[in-house]
Structure formats: structure tokens, C-alpha cells
Length: 332
Image 1 (cartoon, helix red, strand yellow):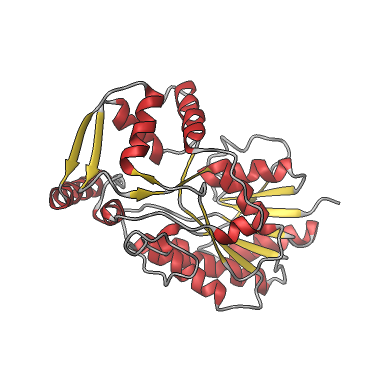
Image 2: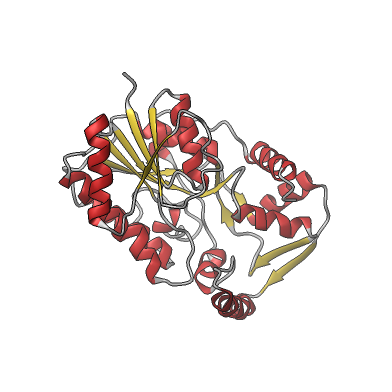
């Protein structure tokens, strides 16, 4: 019989790709979604849905017990549910930390502990590299933002329970079809505007969503437990080099602006106030600005490399595929 896998946050950008990969690998796949979530990218008839309300223990228990009565327990759980942006800073702790804790507690309470629980965290939980040295799994975490702190709290909770079989994935900036954050960046360059904050020499790292999916399943199917695994395409780039690749793919020339940090701070504050009035989280706010200003987001992915991780997408190829998808969707 096929092994059973639950992927939470299945309606999201990364989650939807994980569902596709699980089906491709012949897992009996369950997509964990919230009530009212879009299932636009979850139309494969092999997808089984389970609605999970992490804010309500009784509802969570009912959903898990109903599943267990029919199928038994999950062999694997990939917890990709979470938020990356919010108007209220308190939402990060609530969703990324507290809901993760409640979910793990519910799995234990209902005797549904899987063979492995994979937590999708972020490079943001580590914070940027010191000087020009890449971030490594041995670095002492020093997140810059409420988002990064909330992810770190969830990691620390999991690592403080060695009896619970978890592994933590810390991807760098993830891009690919369906992603909206990269879309806004590309749209700016498509509009002939190339912007930097303080410098164009900021070190960056990226991973295509399909390569990230491969890395997650590689870690899940390995014997690795109670570890953080950093994931990128195994390269790093300057902000200038990244923008040059985008310009070449879009066949555009740009006006190049290097904005001083204090001016960017004023713009971020105004953008944040305007976002609150509209009830939307702006792409640029004071929290995100901390990450945009950091000089070094390069990473050392030695641990995932040792498991045999071999990315299929160079940044050039990944951008080409992503931009083609955006064009096909009429986004750019």
C-alpha cells in the first residue's frame, strides 16, 4: 500500500508544488487546507482534502480522529502552513509558532505521530550572514524580523522535543511559477526601474520551488532527524547580477536607482501606514526593509548536499521558466 502523507498549507505556493511531488512519488496524498482556501492548483483527482483549523483544538481533534478512523495515521507530515506577511506583527507568532505547537500537540494527543514531521521554516530564522561569510547550520540564529523570530520559535519548540521525529528545512528565497512576491519584483524591472537599497553588492541566494520540493522529499525520506537543513541552488549572487539576469530575460533596459537606507525607511513607513488603511500588507514595510538592507544572504548548504541534493535549476534557467509562466498567465 502507498504510504500516506499530509501536506499542510497545500493551497499555497510551496505547498501546491509539494502536493504535486507527493503524487508523482506515489504517496497517498492528503492536502491540509483551511476552510475557504483556494484549490486552484490542487485539481489532480489523486488529491484528498482534509480541513484543519489550528485555532480550535476541538475542531483539530475531530478532523484528525475522523481521518484516523478511516486511514490510520499519516506516515509523513510536511508542515508548510504559515504566513510570510501580515499587517499585525502578533500574527506571526500566532500562526507560525503557536499553530505549529497546537498541531504537533494534537498529533501526539491523538496518537498520530508520523514517522517524520518536516517543518518548512526559512533562512529568515537564522538572519543574515556575519560579514561576507555564508550562513551555516552551525550559526547562532539571529533573526531580524518578527517573521524570522516566529519561525525560530517553532524550530526551537520542535528541537526541544527529541522524542518527536522532526526535521527542519530552511530555504533561502524561493521563486518559481505561482509565486507573487517575485512577480512584483519582476514587474518593477519590466517597468524599466531597477532599485537597490544602499548598495548593489548585496549577496543573495535563491532556490527554485521544484528544487526545494526535491530537497524536502530527500530530507523526509532520509534518516536525518532533529536537524536544520539550509537549502539554496548552491550558489550566491550579487543583487546587481540577479537584476542583470532578469533584464536579459525580459529584454529591457532600466533606470538604476540606489536608494539610501534612511529614505527607504521613510518610504517603508508611509507604505506601512497606507497598507493598514487599505487592510493589505505592502511588499515594502519596516520589517521587510531590515531584510532588504542586510548585506549578506548567502548560505552554505553542506548538510543537504551530503544527502545527495543536486539542483536541476540554475538561476538563469529558473528565471526563464518562471517568466515564461508569468507571461502565459498574462501577469507580465
